[in-house]
Length: 137
Length: 137
Length: 137
Length: 137
Image (cartoon, rainbow over all chains, first blue to last red; front, side, top):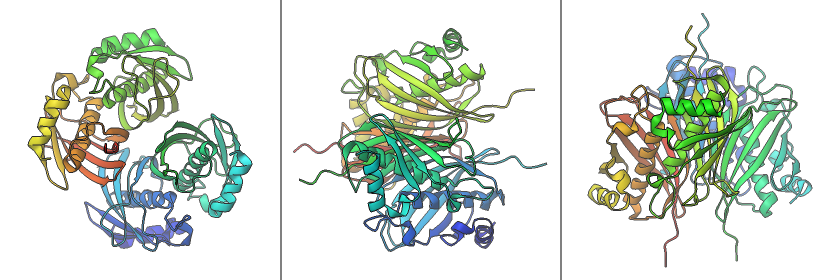
């Protein structure tokens, strides 16, 4: 699936996040996504909440798996590990880059770097495992 | 701080989550909290989203640290590791239990088990590290 | 399998760690193990190495799974997350306590607390996921 | 510090691992290291043990931090998260590549990809946090 197909999938299947997370580009090695930051993601002091960054990482790995194997509506996250390394810039969108490191029959592993738009240093890194359901016969 | 003080702190400082997460009880060993599950936490198929469970774990560890050391408005999560182990029950609140395993001068570590109300087996476990800012002189 | 059976399994299948890790007790909720600390586990300053504690956690979760489902020689670790929280006492064995939090058909999840013998506070916590191979027909 | 300086540091301060782990190259973005695989790292079936891969990741992140800030003998690992993704090749050395993602005053975060020599796909990924002791005055 390419970025258009993935964004349509989001619109159709995940309307509650489709307004916040969009795929920017995708090729075999890297999927890039954007979180459109709004008031609901903010915490006191103008910083972005950890759960908002987690949600971006989670959606991005999922989309990168779909880009490789097509629509698998029931893939579920089984494990996530996340490091919050810097404070995101308050008024800027977040950009995520995901690599799929393993794409097995049962488990897929990806990692993600998240940056504030226009900044060089990552604000967070995350690795995630997804369980892929068996294909129906 | 006791449960009343912690819930007041949530109301005052984190209004965006105070309607969703409440402290149920707290003593030296364990803080119990509840996530009042609503439509916005749900995913296709009626299941709860991973980010909603992450948000509950994050708030619960933070509250358990505050229960021990008092209000520290700027403590920040530096690392989280979460295992999603079972599908939560769709129509039920989530209950979380947090242990503080380390409470150092600079870093605190807690872990959390999350269950659907009325169920025995946990749906998720999470461990988190918080960085505690130095006291102002 | 009980502690005698598990220790025999270690002697037979994992001779390279059987001299270091022993099962102390096992029931449905908790498996307790011991690492007999020797010179090879030490680091400069007399502290125990992180990899030694990782090895103890890894063996302990594996043994706790075997205690529940019998010998599965090919179960493999797929994910581990470990927090090193305090410096272990130099001249003391390590004691580990493992809970199995999920025992599925394909994945098992356990967590472990590690203490220096005679100390109350844990030196490390670890959670691990094991992949369980399908039963041969 | 360059690769010669880092290998001398290993020889002098960590003789128990200096025979197993060597720095191959280092620049600002990436440190490459090698684990010389021997009998002691093997598990039944000829595979490499998880703790051996953990030890390689741990040493590699530590060396990459030293490459940037010089000798800090007492930096300690506070958190590690590792995904074991494929079975390493039995008769081959392991090669690790480490990026330092954050180098703060108190905490440093790095991630590592591990491959069997001559193979394209990684066998493991690991992210680690190190606590950096305050400079003595």
